[in-house]
Image (cartoon, one colour):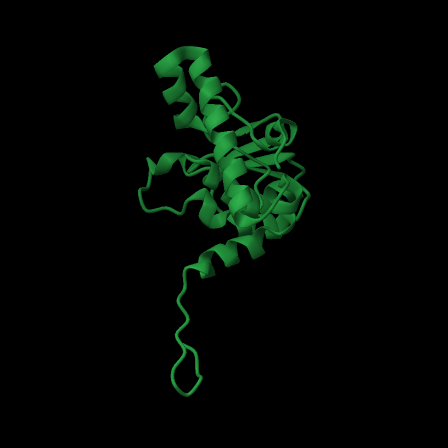
Length: 176
């Protein structure tokens, strides 16, 4: 199972004071949506990149960070941390981001909803809900730790995608 320590190591709430616009702050580049940019950031020695399409507010048809995450991770292996700044709404989104190679993710909207609804306790409750959803999703896909999830990420996502396929066998024994 996921311990709260594992969860806190994986999950980061990155506020606006840490990343303002697309730029460099403390060795981190925010606003990347191109794996080549992630590779360049690693080459020039940055510590981390934050994949973001800024909620697709600028170009509504651009790729999401989840679309470029796996290729970005493959290009830089473990030489740089990758954070995801869009698309985290549920625990299953956290699982997907981790399986694709993210080191952390932002929960901008979710924590704001909790904050508006109930102040600081609301933010705490949102994090509890996301942690519970992540644990449940990990159980459903058959992993017991974040390290196992990250090690088997691509395999797990392929299994999930193919689990819904119906394989038909014809009378001749051929499948399609």
